[in-house]
Amino acid sequence: MSKPKTSKPKDPDEQFIKRVHQELIDDYDEELEMEREDWEHTHPDRAARPVEADSSREARNRYFKELFRLQGELVKMHDWVVETGYRMVIVFEGRDAAGKGGVIKRITQRLNPRVARVVALPAPSSRERTQWYFQRYIAHLPAAGEIVLFDRSWYNRAGVEKVMGFCTDEEYEEFFRTVPEFEKMLVRSGIKVVKYWFSIPDEEQEFRFRCRINDPLKQWKLSPMDLESRRRWEQYTKAKEVMFERTHIPEAPWWVVQGADKKKARLNCISHLLSLINYTEVEHEQIVLPPREHHPDYRREPVRPEMIVPEIY
Image (cartoon, rainbow, N blue to C red; front, top):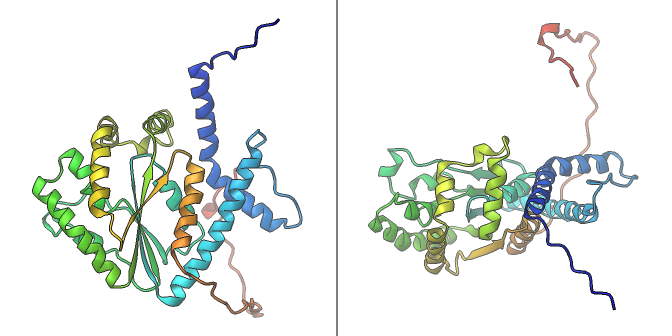
């Protein structure tokens, strides 16, 4: 009787190269999304061009299809927010390279930037460090008909500031005494507060960091602080657990997005966000393009040749 065949163990280097290749493909998604959408709008009677000629093509096409559907719902929600004067704050927190920026891009990609604003504040200035801790965030809160997405927020004090020693123990404790009341005040004033934490496994963050190290287009994303946070993984975990314990309140609960698969994380987060808002579709009057006026004395002046961008493509 012949012995059963045993599978040959996979070469770790080969697996890594395969994952890096997949990661590079994923990096093109935003452009491919736009390209596919343009193709379908220009040729509505023709099948969409394949996104990738590989074994994952169908899965990727399903992802694009679902993303476009959800973004269509985001536009409906956006219109409802403007129509009703609704105000919303969405907080995005999580470890470095957890996928916060990717989902923020997909949420805002089709929305009016005057309505859906992204706030990503730098480290506080010397003047801001002497202010009430929440003061610099208040300036960015939404007015009627606005959505503000915080790419990191006042929860810096519960995470990076605590772990890296940028605040005192007294400031840390005062933050936890204040933040529940601060968020309750926002909710009482009519602002919807949504808080997302993007969670990724240890090995996934390491992989994404290695990709950034070896990608000249992404090296800017890695700061010395990011590298130090990688070393202090366990301290950040403990800080996150304390943060959840002390700031998960009924008025503004935490929602954890599993971020190991970036595409699933985007879809799950957007779908969940939509489920939290009881929006309805706003009826719009049909847009009629007016005819352009023509005047016999109008003459278009030629553009000087030296002003024209060379057409090298």
